[in-house]
Length: 189
Image 1 (cartoon, helix red, strand yellow):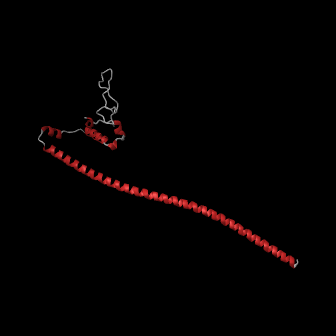
Image 2: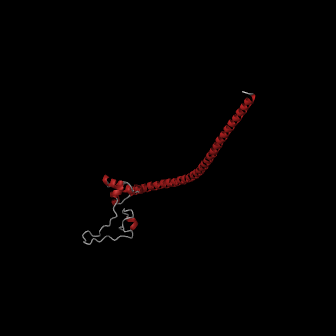
Image 3: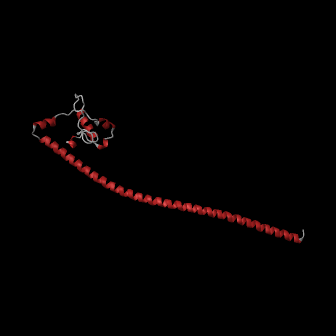
């Protein structure tokens, strides 16, 4: 090889090396641009997620504050109900003691006979069950539901052939029944 050919070969080698380095730089630049574009998309997604989480946290804190305020109100109401319950229990015991004292101190013979009369256990259970079923909380108890009277209208005279129904009020109920179907003699008299 002659020195001119060697010089040309070296020039081609340098140009080829320069082109290879230039292509490699172009590839790295394109890869970096793609990575930058993906990073910007990821940043936008993360920013949106962060904004959504911040809004959710703000709403959660507002809900938490509202629940705390409601909890305080419920605690006050519960305290008032507890005080009223204690007052009613105290009044109940006082009235019960007063009634027992009146029954003990009575001079009326009928009252003494009534006081000393034995009440059968079956009657006590019947009255206790009726009192339990009269409580609002027990209205859905299966025993109490089946024991309630029906709202069906009853004929006024069983021997009558026409079977005229008992006159009803505007709610189409017998006057001695409340809207829940139980006898309520006090409210309609």
